[in-house]
Length: 241
Image 1 (cartoon, rainbow, N blue to C red):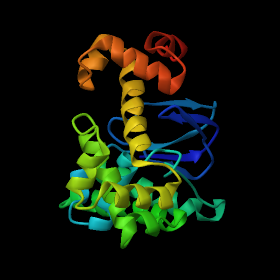
Image 2: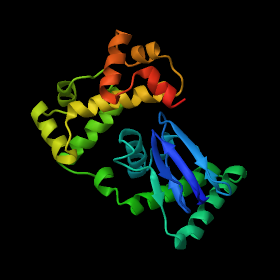
Image 3: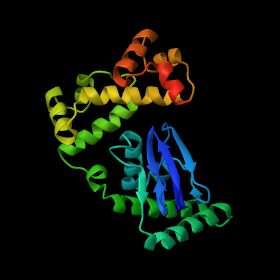
Image 4: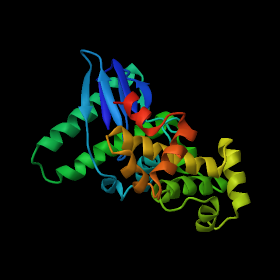
């Protein structure tokens, strides 16, 4: 979690640029690639923590996990607060930092409680109740996205996800189409491509990326990648080197 007190510059998260505003919080999850290009004079705090820290606060755990599962264009990782609220955020983050550096009794619990408060402000700011606490058909969509995030390397067919979610292929596609205007198949393809981009971006050789994503033939992976992005894996790596 980045808290920018003074903004300036951009933060690139999973190949999408987000302007760094004053009094803003950016959430970056494991597996995402990111680069902070701060303007001179910008400053703030960075907190590193594990999701398990919030396993006793289900709605916050779900909120953070959904940032792992949803595309940054669908669930933005950037939360911008009014300048009138800046002093409150600075107070909380300063307290959190002081507790982390201190030796007080139950300091870890205090730190988690303070971070929880910041997450709650983010949840309220972006009004993500529909995503975090969805009901009915929306639950199936959320479950699909969470399952896709963890199983996309092994489950490549829509019927596999439909079976795991106890719905028919037709029902799953209808739910996703109604929610997003896209198909389950396209989401599976996009997830594979996103992970491929992440791995290529950090310098993993194309052949190893292919095997990591369960492509038996690297040439097949390269053809698939180009058909989805318009670039060969090597061209993509050169662009983002």
